[in-house]
Figure 1 (tube, rainbow, N blue to C red):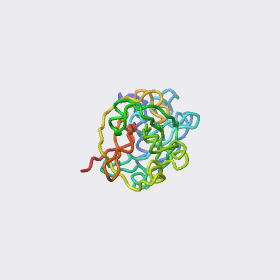
Figure 2: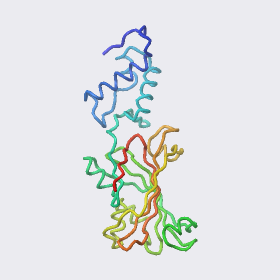
Figure 3: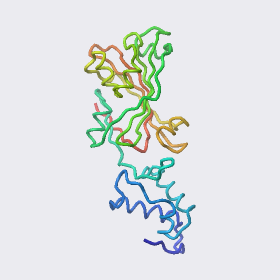
Figure 4: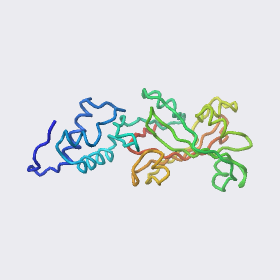
Length: 241
C-alpha cells in the first residue's frame, strides 16, 4: 500500500483516512480489530506520524475507530440500533443485535430526593433515594452512562444488589418486580462532560444523546427515574409507538 504525491490537492491525512476507511469497509479490519500502530501505518503510506494521528482523529470523529489509552486504536462496531418503546431493556436490545451486554457499577450512594425527583417518583421531597451510577457496554464498547434513582425505603441496599447483578431488570426482579414499562421518555442532545467522556472513551467535545426516563410497574407506580447519556456516534434511536 502506498500513497501518491500530494499534487492532486487532496491532503495526505485525508488520503490516509480514506485508505483506512476503505480497508475497514472491505473487511480487512473487522469490528473490534486493533489497527496497526502509528509507525507501521506511517511507513505503509510513506507519511509522518503526525499525518497518521490526524487521519486517525478524523476516523474517530466519524465514529469508525476508537482510541483506547495505552492499548491502541480499534475499529468500532456498527451503530447499535436502539428501539425506544414502552418496554425498553438494554440487555435485550444489545443481545438482539448479536452483541454481549454488560453493566458495571461506577458508584452507589444515598441522598435526599429533590423536589423534581420526588415528584417524578411519587415521593415526598427529602425522601431517601438510592443513586446508582452505571456504565453499560455492548461487547467491549461503552454505550452509555446512566444515573438512576430509586426509593431507598422500597429498594433497600439497591446499590449492593446492582453491583452483583449488573442489570436494572435483574435488580427489580430481586425485589419481586418481574415486569415494568416505560412511563415517559425525553431525548435531548448535549456535549459530554469530562467524566462521561472518559467513561465512554470519547474525545472532549463529542456529542451525547441524553435520555431522561421513568419506569413504572403494572399499577403505574413509579419505580426508577433515570438519566442516560449515550455516545451519539454509537447508537441509532428508533422511537416506537
